[in-house]
Length: 179
Image (cartoon, rainbow, N blue to C red; front, side, top):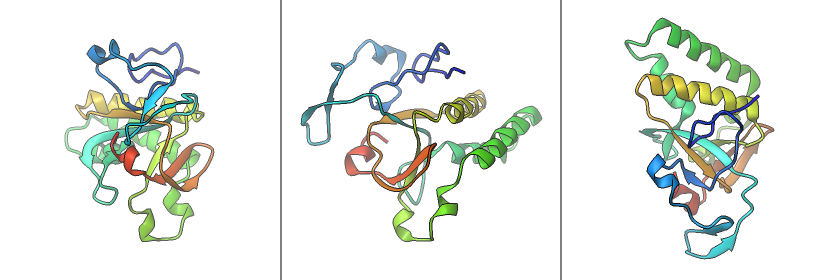
């Protein structure tokens, strides 16, 4: 099983990249030194690039978290929009159903609490099958003119929930800068 690379679309394997949003092809040729990160305080530090959490976002800003809404919000909006072809609706429904069976909602596992309102979900890089299906959702969204960005980060924030597939966390201030 292989995944599409977020920058090149390459299917030969999933390779983790520097944190931040997916750059344009023109920006790919300009990279910072490998192994160096500059955080929000402008401190340089050595970085372990092996663990990069992944978040897919659309252009809409979520009212509660005040950051770009995630992949499943974009899917939900598209599923119920006018003019979506039947086969695309069925594909989105099938993928949504797959995620409902194979991924827990943090909201189902946590008590109702205001402190979770600003939290967002990130895929773990080890959730390969989930990421593969997330890329299928991205492809359907983009075919229907819904732009999706891929965000990668070493840090997620204050973790409220975690399982083998995802982390649900309220972003640190410096993480919010890349969202």
